[in-house]
Length: 140
Image (spheres, helix red, strand yellow):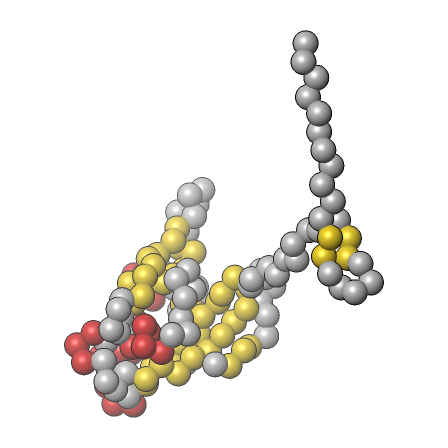
């Protein structure tokens, strides 16, 4: 996996060389969806909808559902209609993928936000303490 510079929209750009050699007819093994803007109808890109058991992506283990496909074998998918982007991916799989035995994919992935559990305080030994405050209900 190669991490590329972060994009301005808070997503990280990742490049993967996915081996295709031993997947047989399963191919890359991803199901894709094209997103469109509700307001303008503009194509917003191609995203991984699911990863098919037994395919190259499943065996490789690095692609994730909701990754946005940005480029395939060095050919950008950005700024293209969803239809053209899908055709570009299909063509790369049938031509270059068969010859090279791998396919190079660049994806955008939403960065994970790491959160710490919110505990009231930590003592000097680093042990987390939770304060319980009893609440008494008044009867009318």
